Length: 337
Image (cartoon, rainbow, N blue to C red):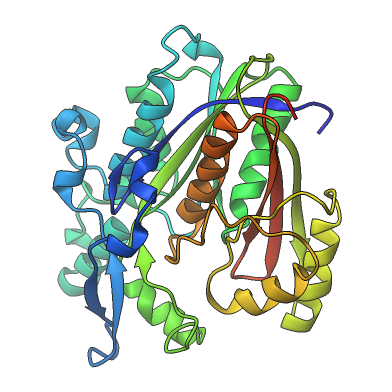
């Protein structure tokens, strides 16, 4: 990045409600014990978003009446980020979504119907919602977005790739503003996949969660706002041992005195502890202790930006620990840093 970009505002949808304050007490998020489909005797805690946690304003909108839950999470988070800035020209607004799983709920319903009733009876109403880009398509139409729109799929470090893409659009003047959204919905079949990858049943397994976070970035400088100053992405590895060295290479892109937010979850906590040895950690923003993939990364970024909005002389480093062997990070700075 040749320049820093202003983080104008943000929006949050989490199992605790809406707004950044909903991230303050994740230990109190209500949880449901969800069994694995293949082995119902094994259950895992999941923090779902209750329907009454979302405002009513989207439920009866034509594009959202049949939309998957992730679409509702995303549009509410995006609307929160846009509402403080009604003056922006939405024809120059771009949007990027980072997700690991996407709209899985309708995909499972569609293919289950396909298997049980035959391909002639698979619902054409459900099929459009199985496409990963469909939630962002709904948002672009509902919010009247005229800039570039792009969905990125990957592990949690996909969030840093989305930030990089947004920075490229802003630098190239393809957009004046970009909404970067990290979002996930939870479907029980995911547990079977995670069990096959040996991510479950370990001491480090965290409760799963769903939700979304959105940050609004601006190309032009804005006073008194936190900044997205630098991004490191695309650091891949193939084993835990190699992961430590790769993580150090990623983090070495940033000054060693910058405090690091605790954002690691799952098996990669082992990598994080070794890679962060000797670097200062940032206690005021404790680990959210839930796994919501790209939504978790957006929440960590938003919490850091929210803190820096009231501490303009400080800076924070937020790592994005991908669970599929990739690492990224972003440096956020206060307005006066």
